[in-house]
Image 1 (tube, one colour):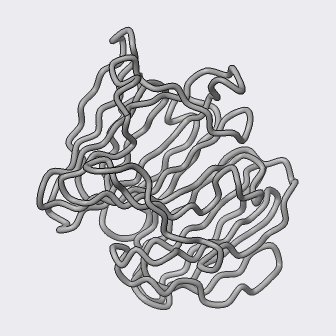
Image 2 (cartoon, rainbow, N blue to C red):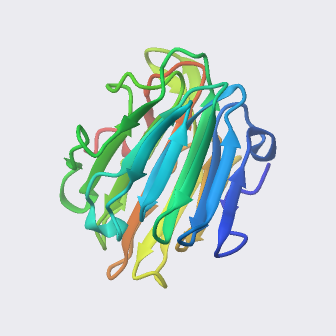
Length: 264
């Protein structure tokens, strides 16, 4: 089993690169770049589609033969304002030049060429509540099932208040049995406020063959290859995560853990 908790391997430039080969799965790729003003980055999508998410800061973007201008106006992600994103289909090049210090997430999955390059957000992305009580969290849906903007990718942001649970009730999406459940690999890119805080994520299967409880810190990534995957934010520490999912079909269907069925 590949390591599920991935620590950043630096504080500047590319600090995460998770490929399907590295993760031991088939679909999801994730990279994270922490750029300083003036830094430039260029890549090709090859046979994959890419969603570029401006987590924080501003960058000038070119992709698929077009100049998309400067993307980003959220200088602190905990402002909870909608992100600026850019979808790039397979077979295209893209480039970013940091206008300010910025954090850029590169979310990828197999592409089919069914969607053109396009800017996504901030228009059309609305912060919405999910859950109640200490399960309350706030969602910025970037490219979930209702948004027909990708071939494979499902991408969303989640803000969890201090003292609350998230990705809860515990649930899994690790079987290809639509419409009951879909197989979706998933990454969580975590941020904390304050930055020296911590949160908890558990990844576990019903049979207990996989059961890991991880203390996550600012800029950590957690892989979810299968099983349930709840998160908890202790009092005093606010939690953000960027979710990337993909699988054989672009539908999000899940099954609750047996111990929480009927509780909510």
